[in-house]
Image 1 (cartoon, one colour):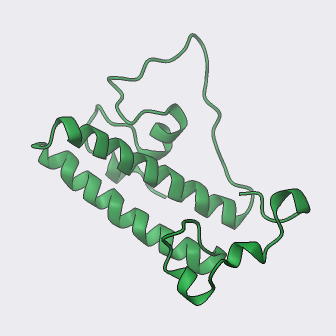
Image 2 (spheres, rainbow, N blue to C red):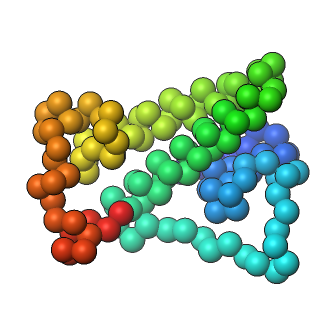
Image 3 (tube, rainbow, N blue to C red):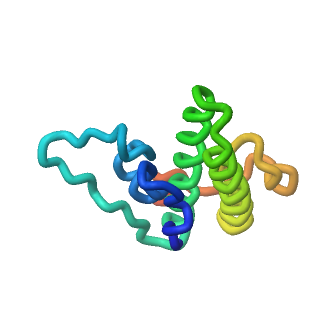
Length: 128
């Protein structure tokens, strides 16, 4: 995904950078000594999809926390709304392809408790 659009100001990391560093705000990030965070990647399409969903969810949550203290910041409000819409789209796409990931998923209406039919990770099933 092209994250350049989402770096709307110099003090924000894009979702991939922020997720890897654990902070979306560059001016608040303090690295630890010479530690370099690992670059996270997925091995399978499912893992890549879940990682992307996690990155956008993290960015959305960070914007929400910021807005708790700065509710008048219209730029961050718009960014939060962009991330929220993107998250909902990615979540729907993920669940259509791989099944529910939350108890509130609409896909549970079609197949309630579908996860009990899959093998668990320790049984050789999905390990996402």
